[in-house]
Image (cartoon, rainbow, N blue to C red; front, side, top):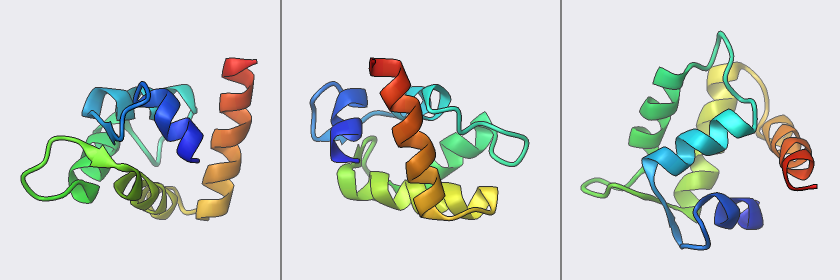
Length: 90
């Protein structure tokens, strides 16, 4: 997951809101249960107070939030992300 985080954050140690949104869209995590509005809510919930970016740890926490919102497991979310990213970059 760390390499995926780095690829979407353009090699930086923190990810911006737009980068997180692009990550969610490209990984096809948007659904009726998890909308673009939910993406913004998750980002706001996992970032540290007063910050405008998320760290890798926050990113991992966001996957838990996405899993809760979609009614699935973190492992299934990660599997979906890995398959999609593999297809994007290959």
